[in-house]
Image (cartoon, each protein chain N blue to C red):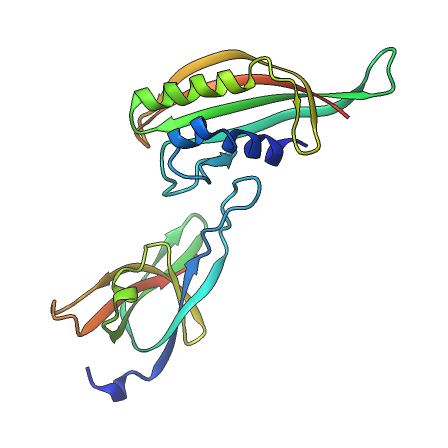
Length: 130
Length: 108
């Protein structure tokens, strides 16, 4: 699974890290109470290995949703833009996972009136070869 | 506050606050400090909640003034006389930095 590897990859980018509150500001699934903003919350779907025709290698297709969260609108969008630059067209080896393709296919600006934050929701598909 | 009234041991626990490799916050509690305290009951109430009746006791725990107690976060928990309680508030009753009152209630 790519959860921790993807998080480490994003935090290793100095430009993105400078936009976040601190070096821990990427959280899984839900925003922790009292988390410093700006930050990112990610959720991972699928990732089931599928055999490819004409190949002995499995491909895992992950749907990754990243939500940037900040108190003001601008940073949520700027962080979202940086995530797009990092992930769209990505083909590299993370710690152990080999990404053969990644593409960002949806970006949505949103807000949360209860918790009073702005967010940018980024949907990405990442293919990993085992 | 007379020293002889601080008859109980109060153990203060705080959230670990560490993150794992996935970025998930560790929500476990670790022992922070142990101090002498005086335990009192501030209020009790009982009432229906759905099909059950539930009771809740609010305690007032008095301690000597210490900076680390005055700045306790509202996520802190304390253990006194075998009871684990959630900290509601910490106040300096006379504003003289001599004593502190910790208001805590049962964890349900």
